[in-house]
Image 1 (tube, rainbow, N blue to C red):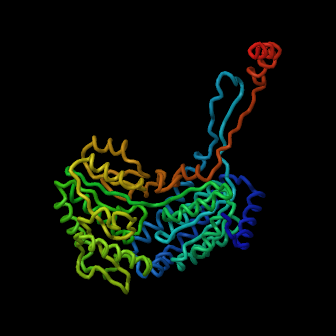
Image 2 (tube, rainbow, N blue to C red):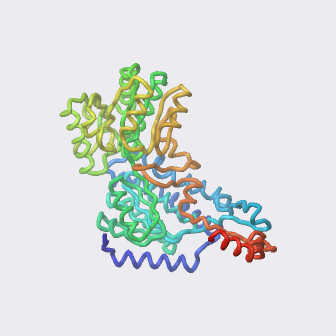
Image 3 (cartoon, helix red, strand yellow):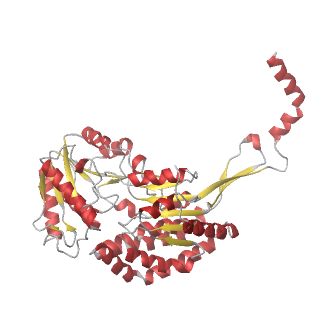
Length: 467
């Protein structure tokens, strides 16, 4: 398939490639200095980011922007600065007796120019952490921002403008994204939906560009009958209301043991009412990002009701004008219902009940591999089974979302929820080429010398075998 590429994008890519060729492997000190300068710019603009994000969403809870979108970038930069030297140290490898007196090691070197496509749901963290990591690995970066967050985009452009030798920022909709994906980068990093990820990978394949895909899927939260019900309910409410559930690792659906189902549902309602007392009009409830997404979620609710499901929500929990949507619990929807077929990406929680952990495994395996799985239980045997038997990007025991905040844990999916990882050391390795280096010893290669010295004997032996 041929892709039409914007000449301006090609020009920007070529400019960064020239800059990389002139300085193909900058020192760790230079990279750390760059990160510190970007960090200073970010810290100065913290309140501006909060205001811009609030404008983009219509209303965004300050907590969602500050603690879940902005601060992870600052923490991520600090973590990289602290460990970058050790992460990039050459890795010595054994050569074996046959290569005695020789040595081998791996150098982790930059790939070149990295393309990054970021989404709208966390427009600060999911744009800046990939490029910060790529820059720390010594690359240049082209960043394509989501068209849904123009105010935040403008701030990011202003902050990165002084570093135009290292990175440039692109804006635009699907046409620009399609053209961007087809550029001959040295690596392409995409965060978004599984369906769009397929198109990105297809476009990158034309140039044999390696890709990292951070996708999504239906991440289950599982509550067994021995769990701390109050803690589980509080965690679930947090996971489904943070950023209005517009998180790739938000609990997508609930799988609960039938023995504690009623108790858990009532506790979820109680915890939700405790934190959101006036329906959909509170400032601490983030709006759905745009009308299209809001209407999609309303359609999911309508489809579930048509399917015969029971839907619980607080009064006044839907506000068309402000695009605010409260928590909706959806019970008894069939597997045909859209809430069980599609990634929800909002504050709707479909519920499935089970009678055993074997049934839990069966339910989870019915869907493609999730980006995350959350298990609430005190049973170590079940925890061990989950670690062995559930294929997912990340597994969290007795909580939700928090694995993403652990700076030293790699983050990424598996199968349809993504490929490749970033965060921590694994992020640096993602954007690095592991260059193998072999140094022959002063005595040369004893094995090769032996073979050469006996070449006549070997020739005779081979000819004898061929007769």
